[in-house]
Length: 236
Image 1: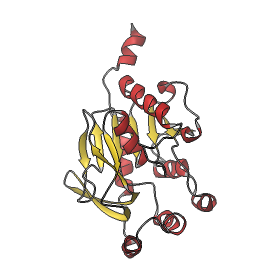
Image 2 (image 1 turned 120 degrees about the horizontal axis):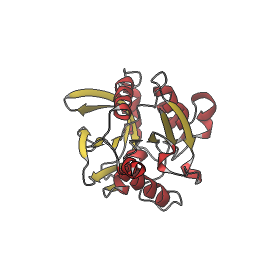
Image 3 (image 1 turned 180 degrees about the vertical axis):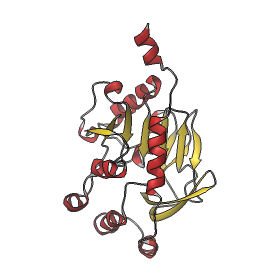
């Protein structure tokens, strides 16, 4: 199964050599599950020719806000809507979670409650899953058809499911503790409050549920799907 990675941001330059860029992290997360990958760097305006160029799409995180004025955001939103209409499954992580919601009619804001950084616990329909987080923006209004699949007290809409069309998560199953520490060292100064960084340091090293999220992502991509509008048109 071909998964197209839509790269919406980049790992800090200081961390790329040792810890990799965002696509590298997702390939590691999902290795051994029968996927092959191709990356399009949409942040740099590199887009697939068509939404059917892959069997599924994975949208990465980004330091940008979904609501900000960047050249890649309008065409990315258009791509998301076309993929959704065609029934090509999408998985979105952090910024990917937010831009899918925004493109489909939801609302993303800079959360007045501030940042979520490091190890966090989420309720996925009664199952506690521990993941690394790094965000201030949140989805605050759900798009039509979206349902909450995971949440905690700080982030009510921490994971969303759109039938068999999209599965999105605010946290980062692909981020290791080493990468979180790297972000704390390279991107946090003067941005993230020191008390939150101290709290993140205390929980560093706790076991994460990244494999559980990888299982969910795999199952979502591979689930049987009804004939889509695109399939129906092709069969006519």
